[in-house]
Length: 205
Image 1: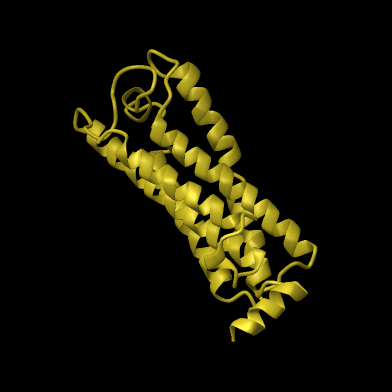
Image 2: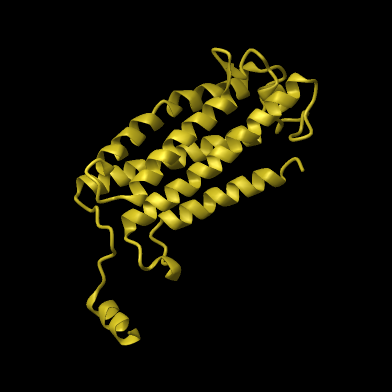
């Protein structure tokens, strides 16, 4: 139970990364590289959202005395990190809630772009998502510093917190690529097929 959900969250993020990559996937041949990037980004965001919700659940359990959702002892554990009232909240708001809000907003922006890439506002929404993701850089740096140096008995590594950090970094990287491709005018909705691929497609018909 302790690390089963972690495996699931990381698997979802890995699937999102695969979708967003240039790896050939026959089921996605009808999608342009840009649409694949957006779909993969959305999947990663949902993985990050689920991991954030899990850390919030751990936080709430620890407030009542103990958690069955993550280890409380050892170097790799959640108790000393999420359970430390000095560092587990940001101005009174649990970090898990901040993660839920951040991934929800990013997911909404990404999904709206994916569903209507032809809309006038679609390219602007990429910019909004990019700027929204940037505050995660100092946030991740601070929380890693807390884990390694500040919490009682440090260093500690919170595995679920780390999965959220991975999702945020992946989102920033994909948004960087999407912005770069957008600026290079690679906003195609349908994939550009080679002559051989066009012939093969015609024969299937």
